[in-house]
Image (cartoon, rainbow over all chains, first blue to last red; front, top):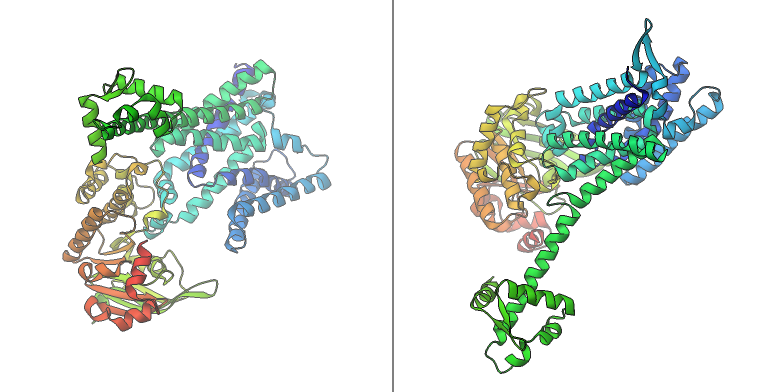
Length: 369
Length: 250
């Protein structure tokens, strides 16, 4: 028997990976915000399905949610197509409308049923081990394992089977059509999957945090990888690490588990943004700094060459002048000069800055560029 | 000429966005084995024409035939190079992979590309002088290199008719020369190549046929016959054609 803690950890990892799989394609299709919309409007689907079936635990609620999820996408697209609304406004208009209808229906007709709005927004993964799947008295673990496990499996199968089609439709939907594929089918299937994933996951992490797990790990993976398949693997890995570390963070601070998981996914994204090799902000900053010095070094060499041997040399080719002429701050000028000396471009005899042979040839090379 | 021998035959094609016509009653019979430029001012409907022929836009009226049958039936005979700006070049993939996408149509749903496809894609990259960049992430390629990758993707389709939407936009002179040599080579091998083109100055040296378009079809035929001052005036309105060409190259 696993401890409740281990059960929660496993569930958290399953949820994170299940969310990240469709998330990769949402991020690449620039539709990340659609996950926010869908994760809210599915409430209406759940409520409507509940009115028909009258059973809170029925799997048909998931189908209702998926249908309303796709409806959200269709309505958004219709609104955008009128040409009067941009996409962001269309999303912002559609999902609160559907969500609010769901909220009103619950408060009016289903007040005594256990679908409360706190659970919808935040979920409670800590309670998962209490709701167990028992078949013939055999304990098969938490029910949510089976729900999210199925969702994960469904997402996996869809992406493995339609990998080529998903890639083509996401990268170049015009080519996909001209080659006889239907990007529209892929598009709505993906949206249905996002809805199913959101509905499965909101029980555990709530509808808002589900969005974090759909967007943050794929976004981090996008910064770290250069191939689609590696983006999927890395995104899954970041999802797992976020959920596990989030769980322990929550234990340490006695805080919300789902909240900590989502926060960790954000922190990992931030880390990727800062430290991604080559494309990260810090790598960019270092390149920029190096380039600035490189440019300053050649500027100094060119300046010295231009005035070398002229009457003005004693006036121009000095440290003070480099401050005035190049408009460099004092500390920067000092660094540039010491770097130039170090690289053998110039010699500083205390009065004059003199070019070396290497410095002269460097300056000439720069000028011919 | 018998209808069947036409590579592309468009009849009475009308396309409208929100009841506003962008293409009016276009007839377009393109014989096999020619290199055709579609020219006209901005908003003339050049891209729309190609996209409608390829089934990307539904026409309000009219028919399209490729070698005597509907596009759906003949789609395996058609290669397409969209505008370079129509895709997101930050997509996590490399040049080789993009070229292989040209073979997805032949594979159909579900079948995965394998060694054979990789080989064909490498050969196509070789033809456009890009084999060294096969494994380069596409965002790291220059505009001209990206256009070559797109061209290789069309070559790998081994089609009979090629449609290219502004392949010369934003490419360097070397790439432009390489592309036009390749297109002329395709025509020599009996393929039909239809190109949305902007530069009127290069029209005569690059192409053997031209279609002048401005919502309506102004003229279609051998370049020398259709590029007349009167036709240009009709296509570009009051503006002198060289000015029109210039402003579009900016």
